[in-house]
Amino acid sequence: MASIPGRSLVACYAPCGGAEGFGASMPRAQIDDTLEMHYELDDYTDPWTTPETILLVHGVADTSKAWFAWVPRLARSFRLLRPDLRGFGQSSLPPPGYPWSVAGLARDLKGLLDHLQIAAVHVVGQRVGGSVAMQFAHDYPAATRSLVVIGGPATLAGSCLDPGAWLEQVRREGVESWARATMGARLGEVSPAMREWWIREMGKASGPVMEGIFRYVGTMDLTGILSHIQAPTLVITSDRGALASVETVRGWQTRIPDSRLLVLPSSAYHLAAALPEECAAATLRFIGSLPARPS
Image 1: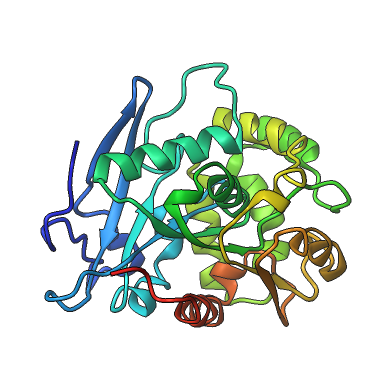
Image 2 (image 1 turned 90 degrees about the vertical axis):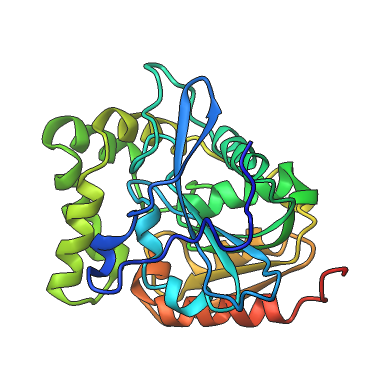
């Protein structure tokens, strides 16, 4: 079992290489017999302090790189833990027939915290990573200081997104073709260079993994657990995103007892990528508004 001795596990993002330089430290944790999880730790806090940890949970076809724009904004005040979820990035591919679920992915994350001897975290998830974060907060309340869900669905019921069609496209044309076809709705109006970077990165995801995820998310429904989430919660959504209307998001957000909703003006639903400054600033304000942790 690993521990975090001061700053010796700091994973600095490359000062010259941009997002491509992430991952140089390549720390890994053996979570179970089928999962070696890659993760990054970013910590630029003052060395005489004991920072709290923010767990950043990426979405489908993303990796720990997805948070590159957040690191400079958060790591001066918090230690950031950025894992590659099972099947993505440099973490292990699952065995054939793996039963995908947000509960399983949340269990992997708790295994990582146990490996690093981190008792509690602020959990921030984007897109389906937000769904995983909600499940984590429900299943592990003692390990959850707070919860931030950014463009993460409780269910895709009523959404115009079609995981079944995505599954067929990945089978026929590959993951990068799916990423390219869906990137406009995902990011909204961004530069061509930014759009191409995200297409290339998401296109690296495993086809079989994506097929398994798409089979699962079409049936995912977390509405039954929302009223049992105990952590203070911030839900961030867009006013014109394809994932769900503001009314739909508010409908499930209000089931979380101690929650608030922030609506940002955007046509994107991958808000953590499209509007990283706004989302990171809102996250910092939210965490800063919480009662101080016991000393």
